[in-house]
Length: 513
Ligand code: NAD
Image 1: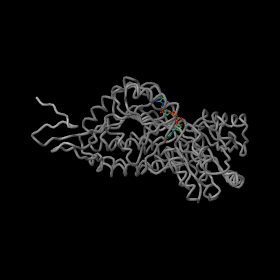
Image 2: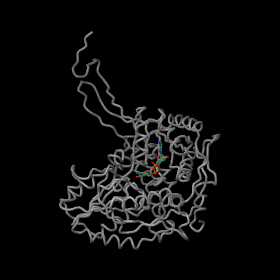
Image 3: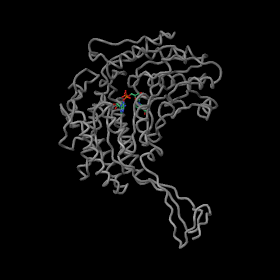
């Protein structure tokens, strides 16, 4: 892979052949088994990462809790300055990190760069926010009293992330948590551990340069069992977990059992409604990018197109024509549109989905296939497929993390399309393509889309960091990133101050002694 500059990128990011998987700057760890990270691009070994043992985890927790005591008393704008420096470091290393994201996860180099840009954007957002962590003041019912709310740092935040956004999701959480005065312990996906090492190296540089403890940013590595170290730990008041709904249901119960807080970002089953008033050209671009971008492995990927019967054939033909132009291959080569799936297990899930849609009576109109031969040696490259299906099919109701697009037909009013759109268990992203103001507003109204994200004349995939990001129902209800998402990383306190010489009780209660 030297032709695509991977070796140079790994060197820039301080990644070695064998990496300590537990907070690189903290020494003397026992370290457990080793995870080998193979690239889905060419099947080559990128590097090895030592996993975290429970004894290691206890040392990490000691480092995090002691760092928290120093970090929380640093004024928030000064913490913002550290996040600003972290954003600058990311700008310097953007190409190298974007390349690693592409090579370890399999998304295109452009999307890898886009992911690092999201990290930079959330840092900029967090820097501004570090001067605006505001509470409300309200009038007291008692004379000579002042009442207000303030937000305090929460403590150690546990971040569990998925393979498909191996760096940005961590940054969304950590940039906000840091300016809020929290410290973080991050367990990246075991499928993309090298990205975690690279990020930790970048963060550690910033903390070392500022004589701050690296415990502000801690890394642990391993599979779900290592994730459980944090989910079960009462010293971790907030768990932010991104991944499958299956994982979220387990984590939510673990955290609730100890009355901790959880912020869940789980699976989606996103649809675009295409009405008779849609701009077909825009629809095709939005739908094709949404369905095949990141090889269908975005939580916001378009999985269902709900098309009005009057334009069904027109849309179907335009999309199938567009699929003929897709180039599948090495994602580091900018000529290709579609890269590999993360691993061969994901390929099996893709094949199963195509079998199931046929079993349930669907009609495949763009055939799928697993590609082999030169350039496809990793066994992870598949052809994006399209199937005509019915909304109630079990496979359509399920999130298959692969480039399989279902075409569904609706008749009559836009309400019928909205009903189909809301029929699934997940509630992440949704979109309507229409130039009809009434249809657009119905879609956005209280009886419209039930998702956390509802777009008009934009596809389902991707989001800006300025808005709160997340979804309802089985997507977990969490909100990350912009808007007031920061509040979940803090604890709220109501303060009442009496500046009189009397002690009046609230609600006019008398207690004469
Ligand atoms: P996954 O659920 O298999 O794994 C995600 C993370 O959870 C990994 O780090 C894993 O080790 C950890 N984990 C699994 N079980 C755990 C347990 N019992 N306790 C603690 N940790 C545990 O998901 P994946 O395959 O890596 O990612 C794909 C899924 O993530 C898709 O469903 C996708 O929609 C979802 N996702 C959602 C968002 C969002 O913002 N809503 C963003 C990205 C990905």
